[in-house]
Image (cartoon, rainbow, N blue to C red):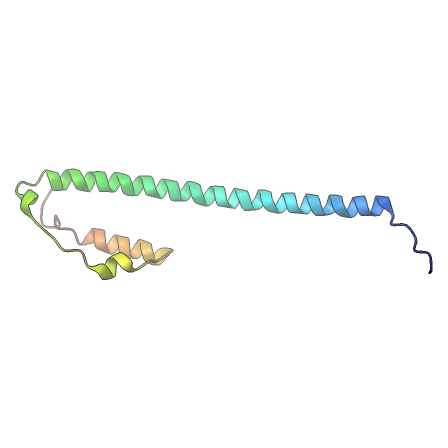
Length: 104
């Protein structure tokens, strides 16, 4: 058998260090992006909760709505959208509210 030269330890350490540095940089960027998206989503959820509380207060101030019954379409409950389309759908549903004729 032919003799194989030993692996250069400094070169191996340099490659390993480069791999670790690049991996850590990638993970840091990834976690930063995820944190920003989660923060934006949390803010949006808080805004929606506030809007729902306001709408709930407005609806509860209208006399006679306790006895009103409504039916929810299963097609609206099963559709899942993401991104700007979901925002447009939410805005359209908010715009067509039962209080559109009531002045505040």
